[in-house]
Image 1 (cartoon, one colour):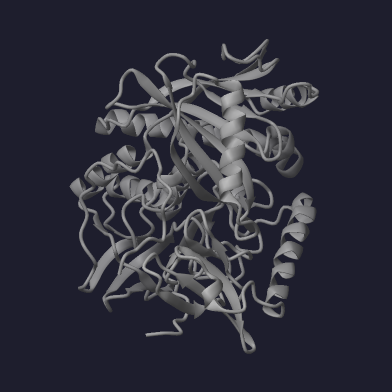
Image 2 (cartoon, rainbow, N blue to C red):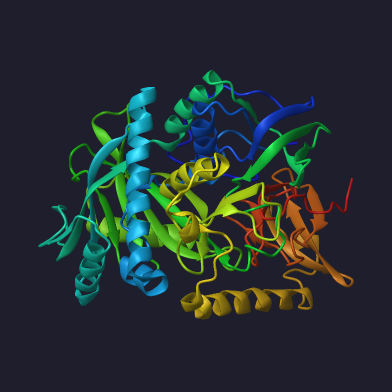
Length: 509
């Protein structure tokens, strides 16, 4: 059967060789079992193996095949939700530790790149934050003061260094960085295997159980017995409620356009609207006379809009207005960002679980640095060392000042359950075009109807396997997306994005 479940292309989808084992088929014993081979999971694995711990990494896809392969790879301590907001939510000391930890993450990545001699295009550069034309710059003044209180080296400049449009006043964040995320993971993978770690791809964890007899069961029937478990799957697949009420899934869109080499100053750029835009340059080894301008933005709650073509179009118009030298759009993709109600990741012991089960989630649009922080923090916890960031990132924390955001997101989730009783989008499968999907009422329930490119109709349950929301069709990625907590399934119902951990129920042979 032809798998046409995804058709967008990412500038990163040229992965180098990443040595790993095929599906796990025999029982194993290890110190730490890590589920998820993205930036967080592989950083934990790398740092633990350097300390002599045995690790097994499991991933049901390829290494970096999840959201790490869909990042724009900004390595920054300039916080997406702004330090003004972090200070409001976490206090001045919390804001300082946030800045400290993200700065340390960039430094740790650079240290690993140098130690392992990883060829991933790591480079230090400045980042610039600016407001849309004609808007007040007070937000920059307030942010500058908050950044200084957080201990960051930030200054106000007359404009960002872009010749083709005047940004007006901007904040310059020094010593930011960028890299090729999958090439970086290749280096980490080789180092983990060199140090004795084992990585199994195409291996789906079906049961995760902590405690004195901690173990992870996989779809082949094999079992990994271990002393501790780390779940680093972008959003936890071992929780029903504990974390998922405290973060919300958002879909973000990215395009890549060619520009003449050196026609745009190499830096990271961000603006301040909601949704905001972010951009950077990527070298193309195969076309040295050009560079790829990577531009992202136009976020929305996952599963609550199906207008990716329109959003890609907005991004393209926004870019061409500011960079008239841009050529054709050669890459376009979307990714899912988990937004915690208080803006920072959840890293540490899993709430309402055994003490030896740990999670890393809540990337908040800064997955590369949050994932690296997870590697550093979880390694300390697993090695019984004190870490000054433990309470800040604790998954059990309650941020009272974030209660309005908590209420807003959970009211939004509750509203999605009304889809259980509404009519379907179609009355008959014949109304579904080739390569598309739609939800149809079937008695007291709803079914997801997909017509493949050959014209064959496939029907599966539209009830998400996490907490029972009705999934919606995503025409851009050819997926079924859950509007409640962000689970995603391919066109045939196979789960590939949590928190759901099993496939949609089939209604056909």
